Image (cartoon, rainbow, N blue to C red; front, side, top):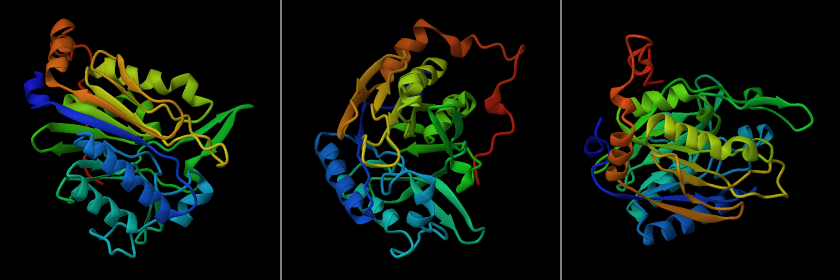
Length: 299
């Protein structure tokens, strides 16, 4: 699949690394300042971190959760939805709104949910985190999102008119190459992951996962983390980064608040795929094409 189909023209990406405190309104306000800063710097695809509007932790999800359905929700039901919609329009950019805790009254379930908006402020896609972060590394960290959250059930692919398609997933989703491969084989030029790895998993696997998904699929991969706050109960790794289709890290920050920029081009995707042409060398007579299997694209 040639890049002129994947990425129609160059696109400047910005990853906004923020620390979220206890005050939701303050978190939304600080996100607005940084997103507008990124827009003024020329970014037309801007990404916020996982749980950007609230502290991250099972004890916080229900307290900060917002109701998104029926869509569009009222301003009282979801102030974050309306803030993101208005911000995308003000910035004139596509905005991946990190993620927020969502409550669904019809089922009584909570989700970790990402909302993507157009430059006109229209909702383009909703992704509920598919793979919940349930881990137990003895002596290091135990965390169970499933104690309070339910998983989403679909692959999320978003069409960005003028540019092409991107895949959206959240944090722990990056560890599952099937999700990425489906999105890439369906024509995405980039995979976007708001995520919050920690001080154990971050040093081990954060950059490795980004580079692995990039080399598997020869697409851009972006990981957008919260900034590290040692006063918080959960210490995020930070280090938001972008890997190019050759799995080289082309932009990365440290643990503090900041913005990571990267220029994405179809020419780079072409260069990598022409040099190592795995897209024409796969042996679907030997193993299946998972993108043609039983894939769910809707909740």
